[in-house]
Structure formats: structure tokens, C-alpha cells
Image 1 (tube, one colour):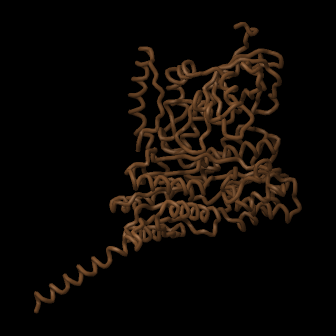
Image 2 (cartoon, rainbow over the protein chains, first blue to last red; image 1 turned 90 degrees about the vertical axis):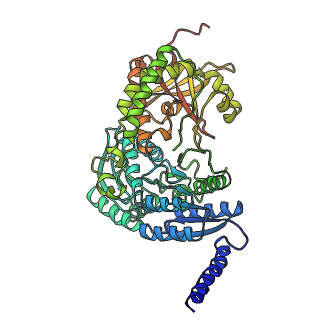
Image 3 (tube, chains in turn brown, purple; image 1 turned 45 degrees about the horizontal axis):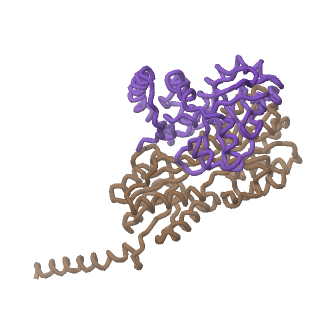
Length: 316
Length: 239
């Protein structure tokens, strides 16, 4: 009785195992690429996910698109899902430069390579590739245009991004590396608006009250630039130069309408596609043939080329 | 991670070889120290401080010291040896950026990177703008197809990363992160200015100048922006 019961259990487990295995590899025998990004309410992350998914489908993969909500614990759960589903590769815009290392390592230990886009992690040799926009180079481009439009002089304010995000600091440093070489440009206010449009609106309102003399606002991203622009319009200030960062369609339209001077395009759609191409190559040949860390240059967007920008991509 | 260098075959003199060996040893000693990475969880204090310093400020990579170490033993020999005639490059660029790049330039092994040209050229100064702190001179450079205009950066503010991008022994993979990569470019530009500034009073409309430097070119760009590492008044065209 007892041995028989045990045998049944073993048999049941075996059957379950056999039954489960095919579902793990998906019905049509296609391999799976799991795409994990921050939430899609920011069009930037949506463009990444859409770009990666389109490329993966084109290359014959099944896809699973997930969002981690900038929560490292949630991200770890999503990695567990990817591991359980026996993903062939993970494409990731991560939820923290330090916290993500463990998740990527866990996938690596399970034989699943990760390909990172947009944000770096603080470890080399864990992910197969880290494709990041050169935020610093982009920031210097934005700052050079800002300086030019300001005529190299005058008081200005800076809106900084979420301080826990390394890109906020990197962009600010890039801005200052350029601007601080011009002694006649004076920063009279510097505040974080946490990447948020509404926060940027209220911060800009109060900056305008305290420092009505400002001639320019340089912003760490496009959503904050949109908030600043709205506050300037509400205050009837058409003379203030605004520069953003990201290359969103909203800011593109504001540049065309001469309400924002410039932004800096991060080619995130292409980066995500590139990550999938490298993943495909790695799956097939066990090598990407490239360095782990790949930096992609940003592009300055002004009135001259705004017409070519669409969904974080420059049309030829 | 793999080695990010793109090297050209470079038969070097014994002295250069020896200094390279020393440099390599120094690098081997220094580079592991570079792998100090900013702690993003402390971004509040390290990411954006009042001084505008970003996270990697605690990193061990000190760009100005690095430039001091490599300028004479590696950077100057590179420009001396690798610089190609700007006239030839400009003529080739008229035809095709990619062809010109393949023939005369180099490019980081990444999509979207500019073509970089290490060049030497001579020409007549057309105009000078030193009112901007990012001072420039437009120079009509001698080419086989006649003079072509380039914009020569005079400083004191020098834009771009052309000098860094021209170095065959340095790439993004050599350093820990994009901040160090940018700091290297800035420190190289600053060092180049030290050598270039004494000649700037001689850069006047009508004067002839000769220079060695670097130039990045992206698709669609029409301005040819040259960052000089050496600049001096030239005699009349005699060769």
C-alpha cells in the first residue's frame, strides 16, 4: 500500500513534469524573450517595450512584456517568472543600479542571458550587454544649445530629476560641465521636480515668483520641461528659454510651436531593438561579438530637425 | 568584460615602446581601482549635490592626472603618427561620409557613433569669433579640389569629444561609466588648450595657420568642427 502510494506519487510527478515541459517551451516551439521595463505611462518606456517586442517577433520569438514599477522586489518576481518560463533571453530596463544585480545574476545562474537598456547596473560581467544612452554626452549637447540661445549670459533655473535615479545626477553634471564655463550665466534656482510634469509646474511657478528675472530654464527631462512651459505660459512669460531631455513627441511639438527651444533625443526605441538583435545573436552563437557596455550617442533636437522626430526615432 | 580597444597596427620606436610598457604597468595598477561605482541607493546625496557633482565623483579615475600621464607618451605620438591630410579627408567627405570614414577615419564599434578623423591641415583664416567663450575661426583649408571651410575651435570653451574619440588606445570600455568617459574628453580638451592658446593672437583674418587635431563627423552634419591639439602660424603655401 505504502510503496504503491509512493509509486503513484512519483508517477504523478513524472506525468506532471512531462506535461509541464512543453508548455514551458511554448506551443509552437518558438523561443521566448521576456521584456521588462518601467511602467508604460511614460512614453519613453513604452517605446522601449514596443521596439523590443516588434524586433523579437520579427526575429521569430515569442514575447512576454512585463513592467516592474521601479520596484526591485517586483522586478525579482518577474525574473522568477522568466526563469520558470525558461526564457531564452531577458531584455531589461532595470529598477535600480545595485538592487538589479542579484536578479540578473539569478537569471544568469539559470542559464538565461540578460540584455540591459537605458540604465546601467553597478556590475560588469553579469549582464551580457548593457546598452545605455550617453546621458552625459546628451546633456552637454542640450547645455551647449541652451548657452547659445541664452547668448552666453543671464540668470537661469535648473529643474533636476528624481535624485535616486543616477541619470538625474549625470545629466545635471553634464549641464554644469558646459554652463559653468560661462561666468555670465548665473544659476539663481535649482530644484528637483522628480521627473514630474505637475511638480515642475508648481516649482516653476514659485521660481518665477522668487526670481522673475530668469531668462532660461534647463530641465533634466521632457516631462518637467512641459510642466515648466505650462507655468511660463500661465505667467505670460514667452521670453524664457526652455531646454528638455528625452525627445518626446510632446516636446517635439512644443519646439515646432517655438515654446521650447530644444531637447535631446535618446534613441530608446532603437536601443531596445538593438538589445534584441544582440540577444538573438547570442542565443544562436553564444556571443554578441560586442563589448558588454555599449554607449549610444544622443541627438540634439531643435527647430531644424524636430520634423524628423517621431516616437524617439529620427526618420531619415 | 571584453577589451574595448580598437588598435591600429603600430610599429613603434623602442623609446615609445618602453614608455608604453611602463604605461601599461601603470594602467594595470590603476584600472582595477577605477571599478569603484557610485552607489545609486545613495543617489540623494551622491547623485546630485549642491556642487553639481554626480555619483561617480567618488570614483578613482582622475581624468586630469590620467591626461598628464598619457599626453606626451601616447597622445602626442598618436597625433604625430596617425594624422592624415585634412584636404584629402574633406575631398573624400564631399563624396561619402562612410567611404571617407573607412579610408581615413575610425569609429567606436557602436551604432550612432560619429566618424572620427585625426587630421593635419593648413589654410587661410576667413573669420574669427572670439566674442563667444566657445571661440572659433573659420579656415579655408587647402584641398585638391580648392579651398574648403572648416571651423577651428579656439577655446577657452571647447565643445565635443573629438580628441578623446581619436585615441586608438581609449574607449568607453576602458572606464567604468559615462561620467568618467566624459571627464576624459574634457581633460583632453583642456590639455590641448594649453598648447593651442599661445598661438591664438596670430589667428586673424587673412593669416595662414597650420594645425593638427581631431574632427568628429555625423551623418547630415555640414559644419566641419576641428579641435586642434597644436596650432601655429604658417608660412605661405610653398610645397
